[in-house]
Length: 400
Image (cartoon, rainbow, N blue to C red; front, side, top):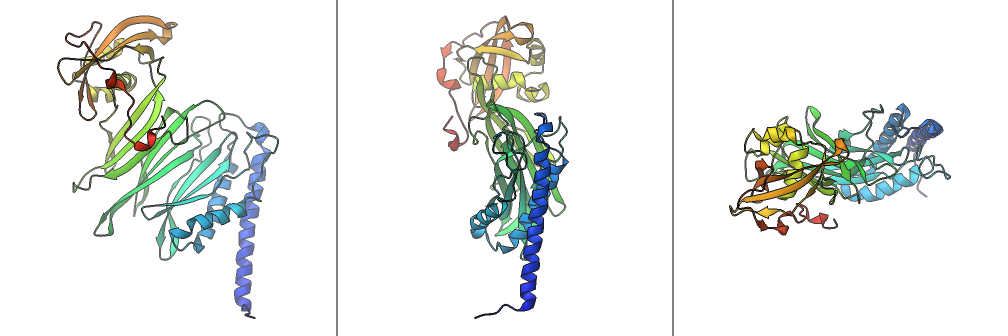
């Protein structure tokens, strides 16, 4: 029989006791969270300061478990082991499926470009609030270098997150890291009802000075499935000093009352701390008009042939409902006419005059607002139903 030295046995016992202590403390915090369910409101979903305590207790316990992970191949087995250990710790209400206060979702481990991504989930009302952490292997230890966590629970600032995807990119030169790491998260806040909820997309730059949030936006989106929002981050390696390229696509509300939703395209270039939106902003003439009418003028101005078009923007109510008519191709090859019948939502949906938008479309998806009129444009009389067919920049979006 092989005997374990007393000193080693005592060390193992002390380590196990410390682990048990951490889990007991986490359980106590979850019990406190659960006890406040009766005071929970739908403004903050029952989130309170103890939620941050639980998030950090869970994160710190996970970090004690990462020591056994030598490479990414063992990530799945370790996540299964941790989830099994956490099951007895959580608190659930068997009589209220919407009350998740005190419960824990699954811990997920994945890897992206040499970064270990750990995603955790702590229950609130109707959903889980997820956090994501990024670890780099440094001197045989996993060092946390990035995190995405919501800890402000005030009613106007709290946005619980469901992490759909974490994308990581970093340049390499001759097999070595060359420059900072960039992390993009995509997600949404689900809630109890409706398909419409905030979608968020965020981008951080991570270097020796720390993690800096460069892009942080949230927009209303249609959430038919959890993969309704997709994105990519990278750079054109053919150019020595190319900008970091961020591309995001999801479904948002359309002003067209007959269609209800349309594909949203958000394309950004990052240079240092500067983030600018660039083409494509839409994938069809009709969607471009929709986007042009509903974005702030400082954005629409970038897609306009003349600053005089701002006068039309002042006439057109930005909060407008409409029915788009058939899109016409003009005899000038790169011009299309988009017509719509508008209804003023601030005046009991009173019909307004029909408007005609002259749009230049240059391949692949470069659109410019050329002119607007209350009468059809000359030589724009070729019906073109294919112009506004549904398109996507991501092949895994074909379920739509």
